[in-house]
Image (cartoon, rainbow, N blue to C red):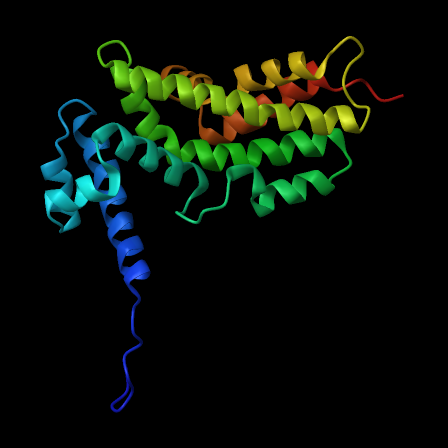
Length: 214
């Protein structure tokens, strides 16, 4: 800042939002480093540079903080815009080629999964011992299944679904192939790269969902 310039005033809301961002980032780092159970909110507070009471004030408990960390990782920011209202969805809505719709969907899905994979490993690993984490996993799966309904609807709207496929069945096929659990199996267990997952899943879904042309 040059001499004589007045430093812009930061509003209370902006300061609160910046504090929430630091807390969420610190929580995500702690969850990935230590797991859900061992992570303590005082550790999160220390890394975020705030009092532990501030963490409780903004989020109330560790489960809410985990959900917020997953939500931010999914969309890539803390803007109050739902995932399916993002610009990438509008681009897909405007596409007419069914194979291209699937390719665009998985290109963005891969970016989202890359961001959330570290946290989803934490959640998956704790589902058998922590009911709160199991509930979060189930909620994430339900949200992802719902989101894949949009893909199925877009294909159906272009008359592209294979004969005999309902929107609901197409949604479930897309969900099973494109959700975080399957992604982790392919990348962690089968050692696929993210590029390989994206390319191969696009091929599988196009073959499974799209009616042959001509």
